[in-house]
Image (cartoon, rainbow, N blue to C red; front, side, top):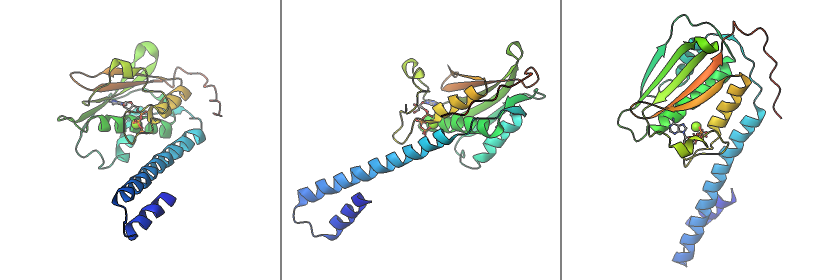
Length: 216
Ligand SMILES: Nc1ncnc2c1ncn2[C@@H]1O[C@H](COP(=O)(O)OP(=O)(O)OP(=O)(O)O)[C@@H](O)[C@H]1O
Ligand SMILES: [Mg+2]
């Protein structure tokens, strides 16, 4: 990277001019950071563009939740993770890998929202919603919560309040949920934090699943 070469060069040279040395060095650093951010963004973007459409099939939601948490192995060490998985749930229509990605994104966000919290707890629960032939998966945290104003923008691509965030996490989530003909909503958690509720249709009530169209 040219910016890094500038920096190396500056470090080697005997600085004649203290001020311009500092300015050049700061500029090179800004460029490096900007490029690094851009690289992350491009990586995430190409992942999003390349995403195969989800292929939902009859699946056990509790195993998907457990599979997701297994992926984190050790990364949630400072957080208390509690699961409330309703037993004997009927199968849902889900592409396991895609739904794992959804839940992993929600858990990542939950963990990040609790960095400054004294109580750090993530609760994941599953339950049947008989009236809608669906199963609900809830991911709740005790983090800083979301203001009413932000709520409307969270799912927009590139919307992020984080220094290092791409803002693509929740747009990937919405895309996958759409492919599943499901829904996602955001609620306030009691007494503090945020709760994301994902709803997926039951497998048994669905006679035919329309093939998801590939994304351009
Ligand atoms: N559980 C949560 N509690 C509070 N705010 C949240 C939560 N989940 C998401 N948000 C807010 O929504 C924004 C968008 O989330 P999204 O996952 O799309 O992007 P991101 O997390 O900022 O970036 P990335 O996913 O690339 O790390 C976040 O920046 C944050 O402000
Ligand atoms: Mg995120």
